[in-house]
Length: 122
Image (tube, rainbow, N blue to C red; front, top):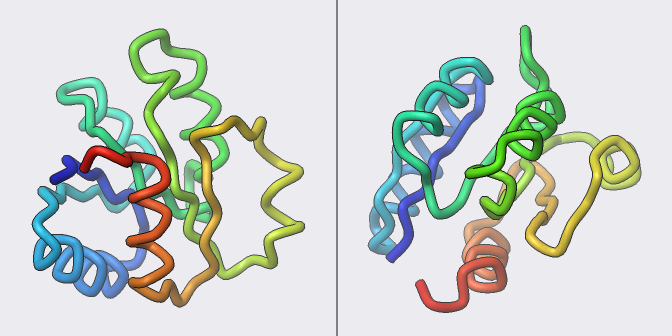
């Protein structure tokens, strides 16, 4: 299955999503801040990134911009997680074929579908 990094400032999101993803056979690591997530990505590239859109300090869109600016990380598929309406997110990032948006609270069926779309071989 997939090697997934979850970056979200809410520990409850980590607990719920990590448990569900691990039960589905994925390897999950996590970070509570954007800078910590970037450090983990630089140390080990995940196959997929679950990224909270709004976090204190460094917003998800800033993490996204930094990743897209780095050669090795430019193609990592990303699923943005947010309680914001979709139209408030989409215009704020440069969307590519390997980006999805899911609204919190995230239904695991929706997340599983997004993972399958982005990583069809996992």
